[in-house]
Amino acid sequence: EKFTVGDYLAERLTQIGIHQYFHVPGDYNLVLLDKLEDHSDLVGIGCANELNCSMAAEGYARANGPSACVVTFSVGALSAFNGTGSAYSENLPLILISGAPNTNDFGQHHILHHTLGTTDFTYQLEMAKKITCCAVAIPRAADAPRLIDRALRAAILARKPAYIEIPCNLANAACVRPGPVSAVTDHVMSDTAALEAAGKCAAEYLDGKLKPVILVGPKLRRAGAEKELLKLAEAMGCAVAVQPAAKGMFPEDHKQFVGIFWGQVSTCGAESILHWADAILCVGTVFNDYSTVGWTAMPDIPLMTAEIDHVTFPGAHFSRVRLAEFLARLATQVTHNDSTMVEYGRLRPDPVLVHTAAPGDVLTRKETSRQIQQLVDEKTTVFVETGDSWFNGIQLKLPRGAQFEIEMQWGHIGWSIPAAFGYSIRHPERRTIIVIGDGSFQVTAQEVSQMVRYNLPIIILLMNNRGYTIEVEIHDGAYNRIKNWDYAMLIQAFNSTDGKAKGLRADTAGELADAIKVATANKGGPTLIECTIDQDDCSKELITWGHFVASANARPPKGGGY
Ligand SMILES: Cc1ncc(Cn2nnc(CCOP(=O)(O)OP(=O)(O)O)c2C)c(N)n1
Ligand SMILES: [Mg+2]
Image (cartoon, rainbow, N blue to C red; front, top):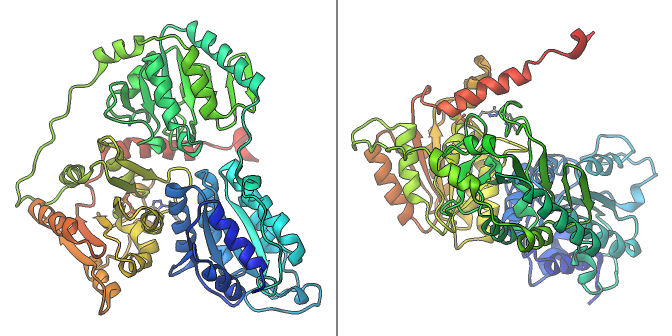
């Protein structure tokens, strides 16, 4: 049996830990899909469209590390670019694989279907170069091993997406078998001298401070350094705050957890201790306009930042220092200093009494959050979608083991439906819950049908506040109104004759409680619960945050702009 380029790719994908890949077929990738399907350790998962396919791969990557999305040329890839952009901005090694025109058509002035109708087919590779850390197009079968290995290795080292373009007549072309996978997966370890120096300098720097704290950012998990961070935090004994995009990356039941630091919309009084500190060790942090509440919550002291592959603090920079190794090294050298925890003990806000609505009460956002909170246990992963769901989700208390997924950097509405689907394909043993607004749901609703097909008991809490409320709070206009759907009924449509999904609607607190009982009992498929809440029932955090983001967007151009 001839070993081919498609077999080479299939073998490498399984070797780097991918066992399910997401695809939408098209005539430029059918032979390639045959090859991937032939591999005994690979399972192809079909999606309704390439946007959702790429977002499913993005969600799979959150659970697995590497992930793969296989699409057809141009009409497929350009939609998949959106999930690729999400993977880039969220630091996930998604491998975007696209079929491409027959090599005999290149340079022959042939006009081909699915292309722009010109004889230049290079535009897709050029675009892919901008949104990946490595983009390759295989020109001949002999080049396939070198180029495929280069792209996969780049993605794994950088935790960024890579792009591989395979002409439709090369997938089945003869190819050599791959060499040891360590050539692709072995990490570049820290430079020992740099690691040594960084640990020593950082320990001295922190020793010179009276009240150091740690701020955890979303790149911590991408660097695989959560365990080392926990050890360092316990060695220091200081307060640990978490950025909203990193929620769940430090245990919230830990005695040193002081809340989500998000400026004026922080939780548990985290901002009070961040502002009191005289040193902030920022681990994998991302300070963007949303996480700094329109630039109003940038810490105002010089920062010490530990990144995936370097460390900097006032007067120092150390390259080639891998985050996990740096944190482990520092934990052995740092002096215990719990001054910020002592102070936090005096600042910690009193626990808020959460009101329990009566069963007949009209359903509110707060009551919905209270009931969702009861669903979250150590085996639960909560996906929160762009919208007021961000603010409601951030308030959830995560028990040890509970996971939280959010897409605050890319912020593509609708991401959570396909992403949670992809995540759940990799972690069917976890309870996956999605908290999503009506506007976002309308973007990618089709992928609920894959949850039906694969009998995934995902619970979707659809917060129907009749429109784009997060946008209303930033800047309102008629464009923020949308057509309402019968969301519960839509789920019946996805069932057709054989599905096990349930679509429910809750107008009162009692109906929500009953619906949640039905959802947790429904093991054969997804359950969507449409929570009808008042259009103005949105979090005060969103309103506050919206004001600052709106004014950040409204800053006039420098020098009058002409
Ligand atoms: C792909 C994409 N297109 C447009 C936007 C802008 N945007 N951000 N949030 C929204 C509205 C979200 O509305 P919902 O999901 O209903 O959420 P809430 O009403 O805020 O609970 C838009 C239209 C976006 N974030 N992503
Ligand atoms: Mg809405």
